[in-house]
Image (tube, rainbow, N blue to C red; front, side, top):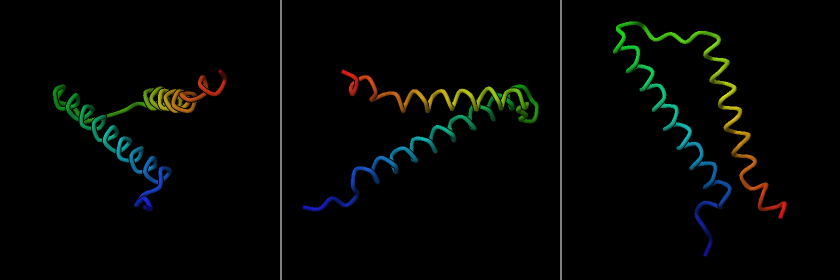
Length: 72
């Protein structure tokens, strides 16, 4: 029996859904923090750079997840 979605397509769809939900959650939390402080949401360029580096570090860790299994 043929699968509706091959494993690669399924992985991409699940990853996209997780990424979208994570981004939505982060935006919600940022909005909540701004509302509690009674100010408009602002993110400085320094905070943007920090966030970008954190995302790159996370992606690097995801890529390295299977590396230890292949080395053994």
